[in-house]
Image (tube, rainbow, N blue to C red; front, side, top):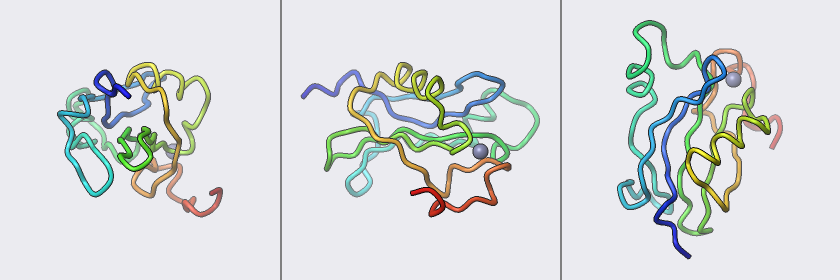
Length: 119
Ligand SMILES: [Zn+2]
């Protein structure tokens, strides 16, 4: 399977726009059974905005699962919507993937929800 054109990295959904940083799998960093783009959300936010705090905004991250040979789209539950996922899949050029929630990817409005609520 050719994975050379796949991308991984952090993203935000702000003002109906996808803001992201992407790199190829070969540029990523291996951590256990995953390959991750080490670019931080804080840095990505600061690349685009002069004010505000990144933790307030809906965000997620695309990583690669080496065991299952598929991408994992971590997403904030408030942006787990078909049109937004479609955009993420297109931008990162994903084919096989699964969607998961993670404690790290919760905006200000989602802080009260725990990850266990729905999965
Ligand atoms: Zn949220």
